[in-house]
Figure (cartoon, rainbow, N blue to C red):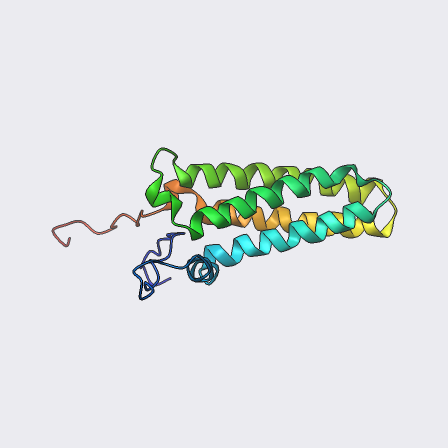
Length: 164
């Protein structure tokens, strides 16, 4: 580790404006999707869709509700960050909101997926459980990189100011 602390800002810089002076929605969405946070949220959406399809095809489709809820929440977060809503709506603390979404989704996906993998013997349910485990792990990683108290802090110097 080189001692430089990397801070994470989920909001990319605003893209270039079009000749009319407005920003196009597809351009801002693509700009966000190219960031680290954007790729993580896109991964969450893909894994939720895969888990949803597998749970829907299994003998116990009751687990689809979790995949649907997380799919909707991840899509809303993708839309909010790509439209630069955090800078416009300062009423919410977007960092903590996203962190709590990730922690709750991580725990629910891990618990539900373990129940499905251990308790059910059909192939689609097992595949849905595996995709759910992967989604839970990705949501846990997203919670780690989104943790608001981790943002902008650097390590304290270990040397004394007088150089002794």
